[in-house]
Image 1 (tube, rainbow, N blue to C red):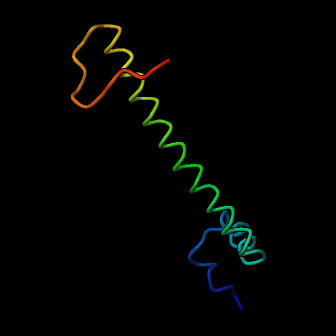
Image 2 (cartoon, rainbow, N blue to C red):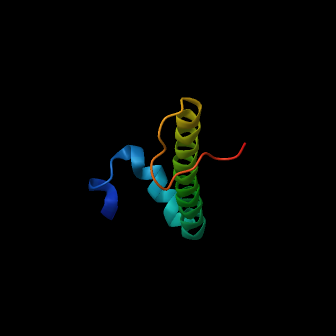
Amino acid sequence: MPKPGRFIVPAVGQPWINAFAATPGRSVAALLVIAVLLARSRNLQTQTRDDMRALWEGSLELDLVPGERCPRL
């Protein structure tokens, strides 16, 4: 009898399905860690972009966007 997910998931994904079925707790923990790291990465990217924009505007003596300030170094 074929496995239920065999027709939905291609053969490439089958090891991932097997690993999840064998250790669902570890799989969920790994997915949560990945989600947290992605969120942190997004926050760092936004913060870095905003800080660099403020530094460039300050060095070029451009008008800062209202509410923004040049970060301290």
